[in-house]
Amino acid sequence: MKCLDHQSQEATDLRWLIVMTHFANQKLFLGQDNAEGRFRECVEYPNLGDQRMVRPFIRSTEIALRNMWAQNKELKEGEKPPQIAEAIWSELHLRTPCSYLPPLPPETFNGGDTSREVLELYATIVQHFHETIETTGIDARHDSAFGLVIFAISILADALSLRPVEFVSAKLLLRSIVEAHINLRYLRTKDDRTIWLQFRNFGNAQAKLALLKYLDYKEKPEYIDIEQLYSFANQDLWLEFQEIELGNWAKKTLRDIAVEAQLKDVYDQHYQILSVTAHAHWTGIREANFTVCLNPLHRLHLIPDAPRPYQTSHIPDMCKLVNQMLDDLNYLYPPLKARLRKYKVASSAAAPTEQA
Image 1: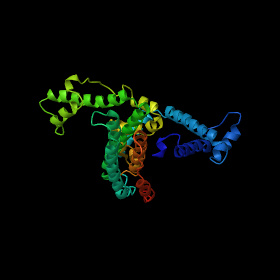
Image 2: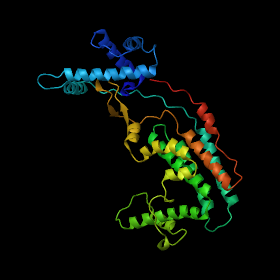
Image 3: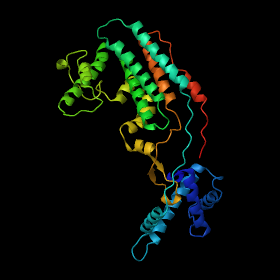
Image 4: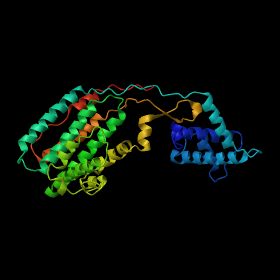
């Protein structure tokens, strides 16, 4: 597998063997000015010379030899070596079975203490909500700030209840926490009443949009509660007067929001790799549902794999992001000292995984 990267150390070692075979059979001669020095570097590879120069020389030489071989080995019938090779690979595939990677033990993450801490944190945030409430009228700042934090904590609680094999679900949950964190930091940074209302009104309008669409269909998804959706759409304002906006609530991309919130590093670290799973892009599918066939006669092709436990837990990263959101909430509505700490103990106590 490591040889699939043609510039890896393993691939370069194999390509060096091909170059040395040509040297040994006197099929390759160096005609450059420093031919003797370059030859010595090849013979004593990788112990002589600057490997930043030697390794590229070996790879480029092997490519040149490969092209010469392909040109000189054309058969009289017009069938070329690549066509023969493909036929051989096909026969090997038909005559030998695929080989799966044996299951690896998952990382041991003791989430019991963390789960209890998350439940206690949830209760603390709810209590702090009641201590800081100033009006029973519409308070977009207060409701949205606490709502985003409570939402992230709820997601974390869901993640802690997942089985180790639920690899895809964990990534989707982590992505939602990342987006909640970026939105909260942006709202905190702007801290403008109009923007807080914009965030809240956009959500209400989305409820109205969904409601109008479901009214046009004879059937709706089983999980949809029309009466509840109707109440959401009318919560702050009669839906007849609710304007529907499309796109992002801030009329910006999440990346732009992250930049303005000074969370570009969080966006870069998490969002792209998690989004490929959320949007069912190929990399997400490849990571979750395929493995490489270990039969050396099958050219390391991909084969569908059973769900496997992820080797590293997503919980520590979720906890770190939730703690950063608690910092934001403390900034908006101090004092709030509660933070998640148990996950660090659980991570450090994790047993090392055995390699197959």
